[in-house]
Image 1 (spheres, rainbow, N blue to C red):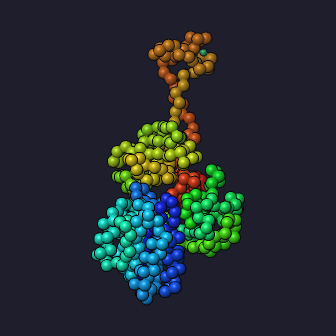
Image 2: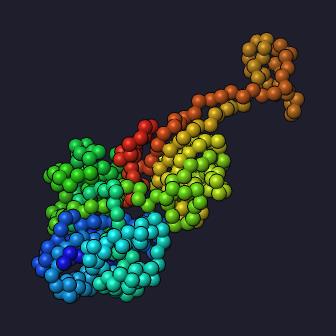
Image 3: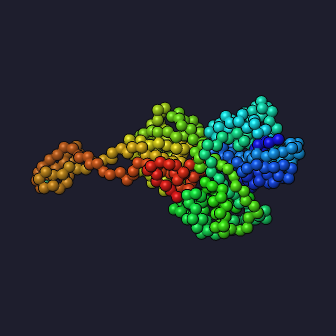
Length: 416
Ligand SMILES: [Zn+2]
């Protein structure tokens, strides 16, 4: 029989990675059955408060004769490798008969865009009689089900290479230049490998997990080819995943915003951008349902220059996640720029020089020609911005955020 096996929440801040455990599980399942196609790495709602690192769940399709044996193998692996001693690690595994997977679509959609409770997962499991393994409070069941049920209209492949077990926890050894070479050769088929402007290799994580590097691209064959370019410590193994990375799958089109959700909405800037200590930039917009505070935090680097140049009256399309009633920007489209003026003292009609103030509320005068004027003059000044799309740089990008290089639109200002 064919089953979708979904697994989530096996890692902690201190170690492990659900993708790695899933790869080990695939290898065990291959001994008693068959694994069909690529595994799927599905990122869920990135704003969820109790998420583990990255909030990604994995699923794969397998042909299994003996389900009990598969469950036994899985339980043994999770007990051996998951970070069970961490109170925030609550693994869940589901075995969903292939034809039942479409029944999980709606649930999955919610897990990516909305907030779900463990009870919602247990209810769905009971209703559809889904075989599963629940460890501790079983929060991982949410992701496990969501990964199986996700209906992907847009996909990106990710090749993940894993470290030799004895290296895990130690600093990663790699040649930075080789990743820049790779980017130079394969961009945009492979993207977000490095951040040129901020000098960061995005492909190599800094966490104490088994991942050595991850390459994100449009085609599996090109990702395999790119392996020849990277110079790193030896890897133990690698695996290609189908993912919803870089697809904006978390974004909801709505005017009404709530915490812990991500949106795309058009609005007008009503409050001039201001900066607070730490380099975080804020401004306010007016939506159909009220005023909304927007932010570009310090880690968004050069993107803040775009935000700083906004003025009241600008019409913008915002993309980002809402937390603490603040929309944290991932992307921005400037739809329409307001006219910007400066106010200057008037020019003297006699000599052409700029007049000076004649005193408080006394208007303006030219000392030489004795001419007078009552009001300042408004002069339109050019904006330092142009309409179009702007995005945060790769080093500040979320897994789910669709980079502009993947968006077919005019006026893209790509941060590579
Ligand atoms: Zn004059």
